[in-house]
Image 1 (cartoon, rainbow, N blue to C red):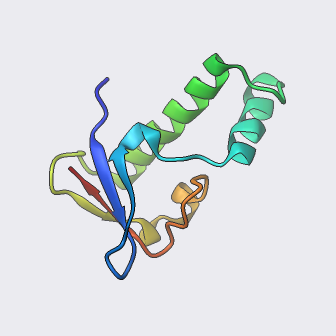
Image 2: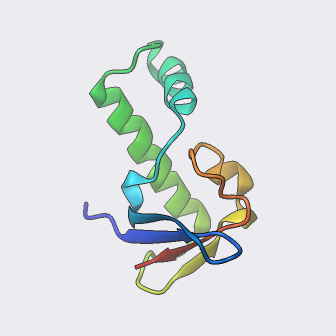
Length: 98
């Protein structure tokens, strides 16, 4: 699957992240907790990490109910629980698909 690139901007227009959607930084605590929940493993291997992160990215795309096409903008603040696992503070940001 080829992931679309995104740009995350805060309220004042500063770019917080720009790159492939599947490279948005995820909190390590989230990955470890999911690994424990799914695999009973507190030190996830690369296979577990990949599955956990890919599942999160796909859940987000499904939940925001938009096709990730160029120019689509999503207000991340509308989905606080969904974007909570990311290392970026995404409360008052917008994500634009490039």
